[in-house]
Length: 161
Image (cartoon, rainbow, N blue to C red; front, side, top):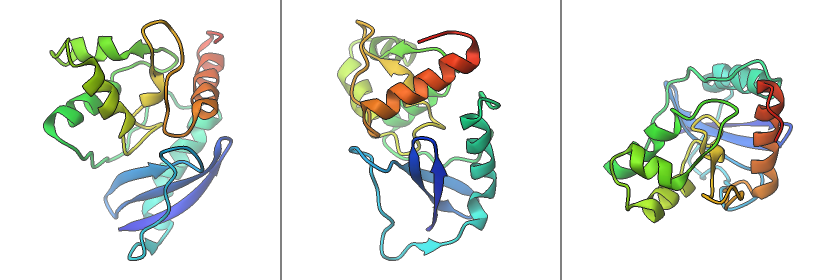
C-alpha cells in the first residue's frame, strides 16, 4: 500500500491506495483521523491525479471526481457508498433518503453506520448527508470540517448554506 500527505484548506489529508486505485483518505482530526501503517510505502506518484482533482475541488473548479476507487465493505456498505456518489455537488440529503434509494427504507441506522465508515470521504461525499431535521450530524473529520465542505460547495454552486 502506498500513501502520501496532501495539504488542503481543511488540513493535511492522508491519501492511501494501490498504484491503480485510491482506497482511503484520512482526516487530520476526528474519528477518521488516520496514520499510515508501518508497512505502507511513502510515494506521491500514485496520487498525482488525486491531488490535482482535490486541488480543483478546493478551488471550487471541480464538482465531480473521476478517479479509480477501490471501495471496501459488505455488499450493503458498498451500495451505500455507491448511492453517496449520486448526491449532486452543493446538495444534501438524509440518511432516510439514502436508505430508500438503495431499497432498504427501514435501514436508516445501518445507512448511517455505513456512511460513518466511508473510507474515501470527500470523493465519496458522505459530508452531503445530514439529519432529517436538517442538522449536521456526526462526521469522521469533525463537524467543523463537514460544515467547511458544505460551505465550500454552497458558495461555489450559487447556494448559500
